[in-house]
Length: 317
Image (cartoon, rainbow, N blue to C red; front, side):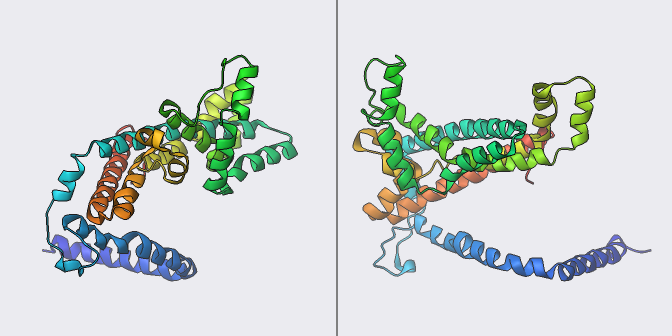
């Protein structure tokens, strides 16, 4: 009698041979992927060995394994710091604002561009909207500080429209900071983020629009009934990926725009890590904060993917 293992051997060997033939047939593509694979291994995985310093009383002047082990003491210290909880709050709040408004604005812009029939105007709008993506954050923050200053164009425009009676202190009050970051992020990235939705719209079967026209649907009804369902899979994949990055609200804009008056609203986990890792030389505690951020990001990613799978939506895994 043939065992199950022996019966599966030919099938496994056939699968291995098929995979090998595929690799040989696509060897040019495999060779092209080697530099990116090395980049990821070198800059994303190789540094993970440094995580062990989070479990030490680490001092750079000592050899790595001459530092005494302290277990989870650095994590315990971290979770007894009110400043760390403020950093988590700020990070999650700004990430959520960027996610909601960034996604909504990208979809709306993609729908708008898809409906434009005058090609020169369409290309002009698309170029103007995605060019800010290539600007340095230093330039973007400089423009924002000029526009939102007390004597800036925003205050002048709002007072001219009688929305406000006197200039608002946009850059010095914490209640405005998260929303300013959201507005600036949308302005900088909306054009770039809309490109992938435009690609998804372009892949929709044109016969669906023809069928909708035969049924008497207008342009708005086609957007609702054909275009939006057509980008649903893309939306969920990007949503899952963005949820996995909720612990990464950014660093540059918060660091450049943050002031002593705004520290309770502007300090993110990345800035907290910089503060304790470089400024104060507490490398082990900064590493512990970085580990916490990475672990939470992984949990959010897998959680969002699992929820999407239960909803029978497109998932990453």
